[in-house]
Amino acid sequence: MKKLGLLALIMGLVFIASCSDDAEDNLAQEQELSQAELQTILNTDEITSAVDTALAELYNFTGATQKSNECYTAEYTDNGFTATFNNCVLNGSENINGTLTVVYGTDANTTTYTATFVDFFVGTIKVNGTRTFTLNSGQMDEAISFTITSDISVEYDDGKTISENGAKTFEFVFEDGQDTLWNLSGNWTVMVDGDTYTVSGDVSRSLICEYWTMGSMQIGKNGLQVDVDFGDGTCDDKATVTYPNGAIEEITL
Image 1: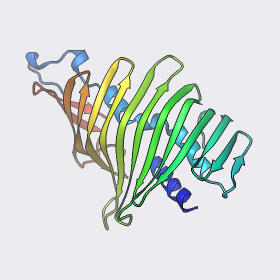
Image 2: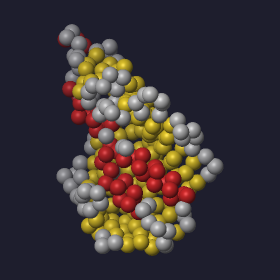
Image 3: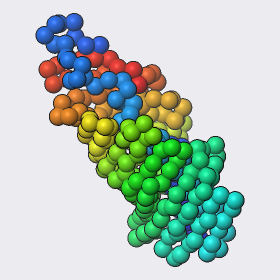
């Protein structure tokens, strides 16, 4: 089951998943990028972490065409599987309910799978859409990278909706005598209720640091374009936002 071994590796990697004082430079609240907004943009993958946990659970099987336990059943084919959950609690997740379909794909250089969710519930959160995971082949002794392409929406029981569309590439970089680096790059769009954020950039951090500490992102909020600089590699929770009029704001991650 070489294919499933590579896909299990993808899942494992997923888990290891001040404004100017000049009055004329001050921006109205609706034109600012807030700390909460930046955190939402950076952490949308955490929203579906319980879904990813469910997927990882399904790779730990012995090769049978059907698998079940007290809370889910899964039927496997050569091209993927369909799984139905009934109040599953996996690795401390919220109750998981619903059916998802996974389709595998491989070529000479990549291994992929696409998961499709239709009214799939993690606790009271409803998930719809697709996520495609691609393990990029290459010099795996020096770096491991994978790409997540999302077209997915998440709806909370209070009516709040977050959706994401686009591609992110995550990479572990190994260097002798250096801390392992965790990189994020790509282009994606996040929609939160009535606000739309477009994101592009390339940022990094050491795995021993909680925050992104190097690189920059260009973020558009409803047409407003800002640059976010995450620093020089120092492990801290600060980033610098530069607005189109030159105003600079320090923000907490």
